[in-house]
Length: 200
Image (cartoon, rainbow, N blue to C red; front, top):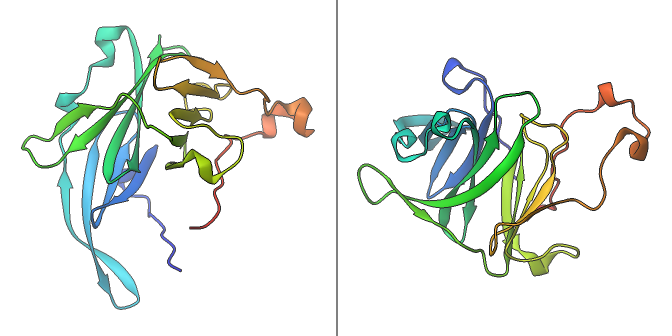
């Protein structure tokens, strides 16, 4: 078993999302968005970075100022594709409301890189969290459904947890909330919830 630790550096400071895809480590600034590809090679007991590439996807994405709001981004590997997940928020206040969600597959075969909109996941589902994302067939676990995205609270709104339906764009809250009364912890001690998955 191998474990990874990403050290803090000026290049990767702040909120980031990471994914391993086609032999590279991709690192995304969640609110900028800057996507970087790191080529890795084993070096004795560790790993070294042999090359870093700025994927320059910013010009492909909508400008949040045009929508009078904000955007946040995540990446996840799904069926051999690296997906970019966009959440659009209304306004700039501390507690934003999610207006809509869009998902794109990144196309690395062209320069500049391209985006292809994804309209559904079939029988798969995707879990999105502030510390990473995971995709898998819904039939592997009880209580989850295909063609859905499950979100835990994001940086903008710690109370915001919802399920997004890819087929019709509907959003609904989780049936059970992790409120302080439910778990017996004062609210000021609560951090952001995370998804925990069985090892593969």
